[in-house]
Image (cartoon, rainbow, N blue to C red; front, side):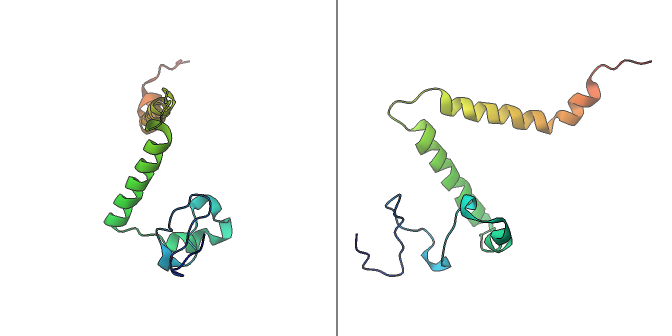
Length: 105
């Protein structure tokens, strides 16, 4: 697989073009070491458009991996539902903790 354009990197595992060829070596969060975390976060785009595009990429990855499959099951939707229930429980924990019955002695 010859690359005629030296500025565009080809991901060997996926066979797709690197979406950020101008940033040097683009790494995903799982590939970043703890010492490199500050510089990696400094290179991210935290503008509203950057955050919207990151959420869109995440949605597309989740949809294509768990929902848009030939032999799909309930796993992808169940994972989303369990995540929603856990997150809503964490948000309401102080209120739930305050309202539970206590022994007064």
